[in-house]
Image (cartoon, helix red, strand yellow):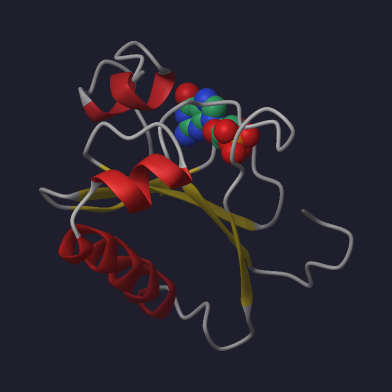
Length: 116
Ligand code: 5GP
């Protein structure tokens, strides 16, 4: 069940500020408050989805495809494709998913050996 008071829901409602990288009516990309690499961006769909499973199984294919296409656009827009990047999705307890609104981490800007 989706918790409408999770931190990303509050960010989407503009109750909590964030440093926006890209936003439109379907997606929001913003900088992680506690970066694990020189560039650490979080990407979220605006639909109320808890985790990866929820995102893939409950949303229609075009919404899923749109989200992943926007990840590429954000990466390319910042030139991160030149040297490489890492995408991470933490799903559930064993992965220590902290925020129960589906999100993807984009890590880049330095060599990511030892960073995850
Ligand atoms: P998870 O562990 O759920 O995959 O990742 C959640 C991420 O959200 C963490 O990297 C954490 O630093 C980030 N985060 C938590 N609260 C906030 C916040 O209020 N603002 C921003 N920008 N990032 C946050």
